[in-house]
Amino acid sequence: MTEYDGGPVALVRSALVAAGVGDTVRCFPAGVPTAAAAAQALECDLAAITNSLIFDLGGEPLLILASGAARVDTALVAAQLCTGKIRRATPRFVLEHTGQEVGGVAPVGHPKKIRTLLDESLQAHGLLWAGAGDHHSMFSISYRDLLRITGARELAVR
Image 1 (spheres, rainbow, N blue to C red):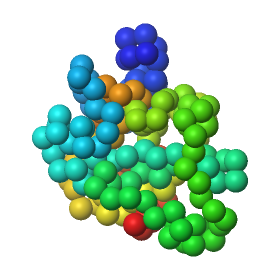
Image 2: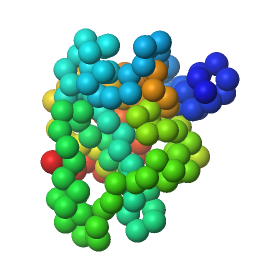
Image 3: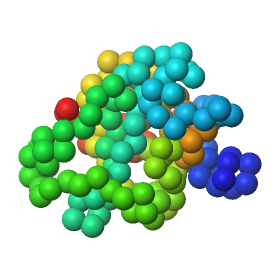
Image 4: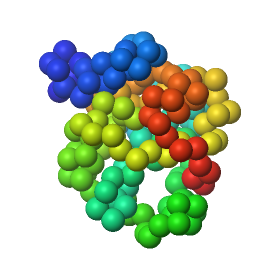
């Protein structure tokens, strides 16, 4: 699906506009399925790419918005949340809770609100880029706007 058929990208565009940040979605025909591919296509720092990573926290989704330049330390996150083990979600779990496929998950545009954490290290970048619902789309946003529209909790995730 693409933004033209009412698919995930259309939902992301609608969520961005409804949140007052505007439609900044850019589409890339060759695809941007990884943070490295997105950084190359956008000619930006890998650390400014915001990965939307879904984890399984006791059967509930946990969305961690993390810098594309680092891996999330799930043990550190679990300790800060005072919770049990955080597991990487299966592709099916991700699709079920976001309506989007792994590699294209956006921070917004999901069927229901998802508990969200925002990597504090992303504050270092004036402009962030995040997946827009599929493997071909990204949108730009400031750290403050991303924090506001997702209702995320700021946290050191690495």
